[in-house]
Image (cartoon, rainbow, N blue to C red; front, side, top):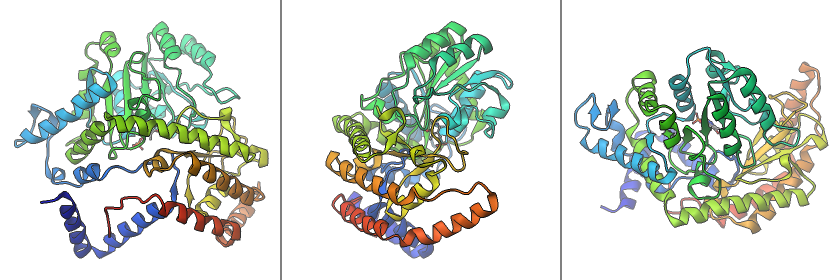
Amino acid sequence: MEVESVRMEWLHELKRADPEIYDLIKKELERQRTGLEMIPSENFTSLAVMQASGSILTNKYSEGYPGKRYYGGNQFIDMVERAAIERAKKLFGVVHVNVQPYSGSPANLAVLLALCKPGDTISGMNLTDGGHLTHGWKTSETGMLFNSVPYHVKPDGYIDIDEVRKIAAEHKPRMIWVGATAYTREFPFEELSKIADECGAYLVADVAHISGLIAGGVHKSPTPYVHVITTTTHKTLRGPRGAMIMVTEKGMQKDPELADKIDRTIFPGLQGGPHDHTTAGIAIALLEASRPEFKTYAQQVVKNARALAEALKANGIKLVTDGTDNHMILVDLTPFGKGKGVFVQDALDVAGITLNKNTIPHDPASPFYPSGVRMGTPALTTRGMKEPEMHIIGKWIAEVINEAKGYELPEDKETRQEYLKKFKAEIPENRKLVAIRQQVAELCSRFPLYPEVSL
Ligand SMILES: *Cc1c(COP(=O)(O)O)cnc(C)c1O
């Protein structure tokens, strides 16, 4: 049977079985097709990845690891998981891989629990400086179970390596995180590895955002410098929603039991049966990422981010660190006042451009009403867009910011709610935004998403 006809049949069955959910999936497909998806942590997987993720592998229980399962009937699942592991080992040059974490956050928690005892000191990039919740932020269990001493970025937006050195000397952390959700420059793996080695800390790279760029050879690999690497599989790596934990040669030298400790913490420590359908999707994404076309893709992601950064700057928009080395751009909206992120995000939404408000380094406003917006090029690049499109999009974004910048967030909480309500009511009526929305839809129609799929 042809792959295409199988797929159509599945969707046909979905339509019959649950028209309500079918209709919502159809609407979401339409939304993805007609708008510009610029959230830097999102991407569009291949149909092959989706077919594996939606396959009969979801039916199986396979607690344990290949060759060591608690249930029978795992001969093919073992092969799927081994394929994923081998492909990841090869692609990232590591000696051990666990592909079972349900997602990035549980993977990070597992690494912390495998390497540290509750109460131990850890250090990661502060959340409002661009770090991830799971690197020890106070509202995350990782900040409650461990003694978190975060480091920051300097006023210029780059990681404050001197501060990391000071924290290492003073607090002797057991583990140091390198990685972020909002950082536009190359990570200083080498410098941080010297600091970690000097104080005896584990250095763990969380490359959730940039693993696709590393696989494609456009970001330095952490492998020679760190002990452990965690990554999501659904961001630039363009796989299904999942995660991996990888142990490097350097990690095994520091602790020969590292791989076992991590595997035991995932199962039975934190999880039950692995999501075999996701494992298959990860294996496919890793195969795709090992191909020359993926290198071209990763290069284009970065070229597009640079072109977009140039276009924004040419249109009077200020960027954190004044540019980007990767797939992401952080716009600093403080020249227009503080706390403007929420207005710009909503106005862009009206224009058909999806991204998110974000804190900027030393944000003068609160994390809830931050003074920046974050955007990225992975999804647009998957659609086939290149530099000429980035120039147009940069100009549109600058125009939308111009429309939204006049809104001022009231200091007083009650008037604030009223003000936001009024803003939300009037912004969809803004003529300029509605006109841009039409142009966005026209641009999107020239870069069709999943043209093989009709619902
Ligand atoms: C996205 C992300 C995570 C969390 O991944 P989830 O799958 O959303 O739990 C962890 N670390 C970093 C740096 C991320 O960007």
